[in-house]
Length: 137
Image (cartoon, rainbow, N blue to C red):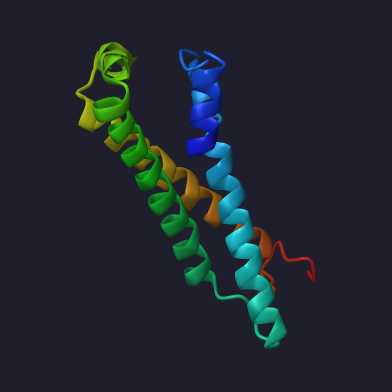
């Protein structure tokens, strides 16, 4: 996500909300890889993939990834590019202007929600407990 941020800044695309939102694709990819690894680990032991740890992985990957990204944005905006801090502070988020720390908080919340929802969807896809919509039914 940090490399993506640097690239979109070098290409001068940082003003596009759609392009900035694209950084969440990396959270989705990380959650997919983490849950695939969890599933493979449990399949090697001939056990069913546990549901709650899969959800926790999605949540934690989203939280940690977005928190690191938000910290990078804060460090960049405060120390490396103070002009960017002004841009962030004057952008219209959710219909209001937010302080820089709240912008970083919204990045963390969005990334955590993206990771948690991705984990939820993947764990539902991997569910083979024999429920109504199971492949075996």
